[in-house]
Image 1 (tube, one colour):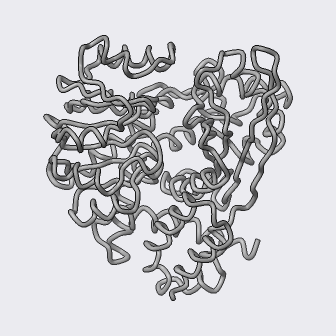
Image 2: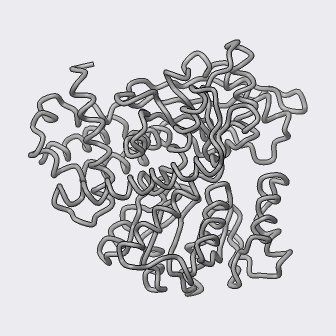
Length: 451
């Protein structure tokens, strides 16, 4: 049994219930095998063993009052995984599925994603099993304030800088930051994804979706292609999905799908700018369900099915795909159906949205596959740019932030290809992303000694 296989097995034995974390660790460790012989100094310093253990894991009670005056109790989490190259950085997720294993998987992925951006950010993640759906603004505010009453003592602009994730958008960030300011008595860049009126960066809401599309454009260019005339499938309907659709449209493609936890819409004519405006109002303001789009535009709605289930069952042709909903949303069957239906490029807007069977299918068929830690790094990269702007007490114009984002995504793409070639896996974006991110963090850890 190899060293890295032993580490994976030890992780599974130590925390047997954390399946998503096991999956993330195994996916990374399998691709790091070429680094073991090339870097015996990493083996001697036990870098591989140390990098799978968080620096710190926080779990806390979050009591709050609902609109009826009843006391509700949720769990809060923050996993500060690795700060070798900078302050812990990673989002907060509010969703009923949140548990320690989910947060550890996300925090672990964040280490390598943040390293790829070239910005000085470590990896962390947090959240709660609180569900903002169906809650009033007052209930969400009370929950956020209670959550921050504990979290504030563990974060800071040079310590740990959270951001948003699933269930945590502009409204939640505003409530969280407002309470941090109150109890901390300071206005610092301790959260990113803030409104532009109080320190947020332009392009931040768009960044993950734009970045995933820019990364896909770089992959397409390696085969002499671009988005013009391509039919594109997108899952999800939050910020990432919305701005993926917007950028796909701008680059000449046609997005035909969106989804939420209730079902999927397929609009064969394309989700154009006017229709996307309706989606943004529906989801960001009214907080409605995607079925309302189908009702308004008289198109097909598939109740209870994911976008990928619909594409498989209906045989819908797509050239490119952007899973932007949640982890493991594409399995082996759906991956095979995508390829059968013409898909030759897939860029992950969500974190680990493809399960191992799906990834094997992509790689076996040599399609252009951008793994999440590379393809969706635009969001945290722009959060890093927001941190820089906050530190300098200035705000860059939209064009400058977008230009920097494009440069970062080009740099990530090049880093993936360069690392894949240097370690004998030319063209393998998964191996390239993992190794490029790992080497940077490992060298920093080695420099610090055993800490």
